[in-house]
Image 1 (cartoon, rainbow, N blue to C red):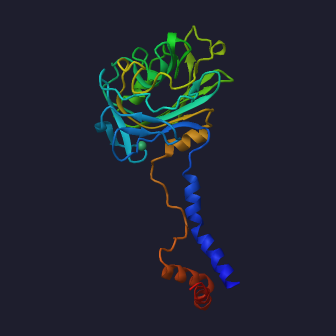
Image 2: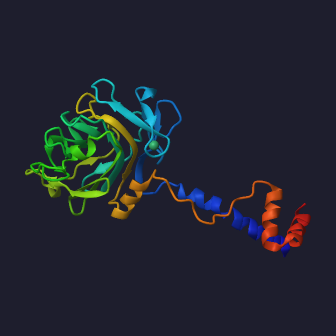
Image 3: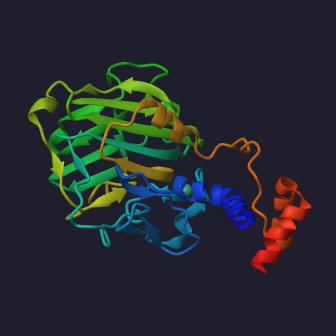
Amino acid sequence: MKRTIGLLLAALLLMPLALHASAASVPEDMILYFAFDEASGKDLIDGKGGNKLTLDRESRRVEGRIGSGAVSFDGSTDQVLQTNSGMRQDLTLINTGNAFTVSLWVRFEAGQAEKGDQTLIGWGAATDYVRLFVQGGSQNLGLQTAGGYPYAFNHNPDVVGEDKAILLLDSDEWHHIAVIYDGAAKKVTFLIDGRTYEGIPSPETDWADTSYSIEAMKDWFTLGSMNDKSTANFKGMMDDVRVYDRVLREEELLALMKLGTPQEPEPDTPAVPETLDAFTAALAAVLGSGAAAAVFRRRR
Ligand SMILES: [Ca+2]
């Protein structure tokens, strides 16, 4: 009986370890996850599994906004991070007939407001692509497919004022960006630092008649540039890129935004004893010293 109590207590004491392990798992509905937290090297591993990007040079690794690492882009035409090598070929990444959510952290270099288009993420080939970018002309955050439509911005590009995306982003500080595409409603929503902006389609846009499908990594998945690597390059830093195959709820996106901020310690979490003596002492605190000693006499 006492041995049973001891084993039960041991299981209870070890529970925090088990809970911690499950909390670290990657959600099923996430289809890509690049944390950029590898200690060194050029490989960028997809935490969801099965995919890999490659840095053109290791020095692009910088201090992370979430976790230990992030990657930097210099905005030039010949030193752009991207590759499709090592990517799974069976992955339906973006299909505008369905739903998807992209979440990432970016840090634009200040003074880049006059730069042309800056692509954050691109999918697909030169003639069949979707990209998330800041447009040079309107200076707003946008989602675009080849041919210019469907094409949506975080608000009407004719609007001027403090809501211009580039004014929010062009600041040498980290910002959280999300784009949510609701395939059923044919609706695009952008979030910048937790604030919602409805996507305003361009006049010729008809999402309802369009079902762009980037079925696989047959061509390109790029970070910081268009598919051909040489145009619309991003200048700044990027971290924690996540792609989901559904619409994320607002509270889920706000939780992603809070990642990396200092967390309050969990109250009254029992410490896990590292030695048998410490374990005996912990057991004695619950059972009394005589009962604890009896448990270990039997085990020894
Ligand atoms: Ca990171």
